[in-house]
Structure formats: C-alpha cells, structure tokens
Length: 134
Ligand SMILES: [Zn+2]
Image 1: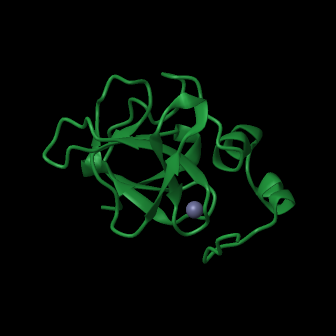
Image 2 (image 1 turned 90 degrees about the vertical axis):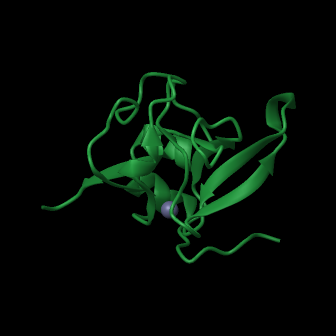
C-alpha cells in the first residue's frame, strides 16, 4: 500500500519543479556531500521549509552546530516530520520525511547535545530558509 500525503505529485512533476540535486536528495533519498550544503553553517533567524512543498519544518532556534557536515536541529515543528525505520547500508537508522509531501529530508539520531537528545541531520538541498520578517 502506498501512503497518501496531503501534497501528491508525480515524479515527472517533481523533476520539473526541483533542481537536479534537490530531486536526487528529496525524491531519490540521496545525501549531499558533507560540508557542501548551503545551510550547514547558516545561523540566521527564521524558519526552514520543505524545498519540495514549502511546509514549515524547523525553526532557527532548533538549529545547532553539530560539526557533522550537515544542517542539524535538536527538534522539529510538531507534526511536520514523518519517521520511518531505514535498514539500508546494514544500519538501523530513522529516516525523516516531510509529513506533508513524503520527500526525504535526512535522518534523526538520538545523540543530540541538548535536552531533547535528538539530532535531526538534514540535507541543505531538502530545505529552504525563510528569514523572519521584522
Ligand atoms: Zn514537503
């Protein structure tokens, strides 16, 4: 059974809407090279939205410097994330998807440094930053 999301598009529609790198990460569950993403060292105040469907996923005060090479958050907007067990590459990890459109964001690990204990490790290609308007 294929899960239905509030936002559904065909793969050819996604391909048209997204850049090649965004498509590879969001729709083919790719991973960008560490330290390569535009939001890795980005710490302005605002919100991070799904690059595919524009749903709000993270707030800048949830972001922290993890030194892992990808944008990292210690929490996410409630209900915005879908969690799926991922057994690829011989590991058991938790994949994170946009709950609104099912696009791949990254993985979440339970070794975070803050009180949530979580480290959401997200590809820059999966998110778009929106600055807080003054
Ligand atoms: Zn989305």
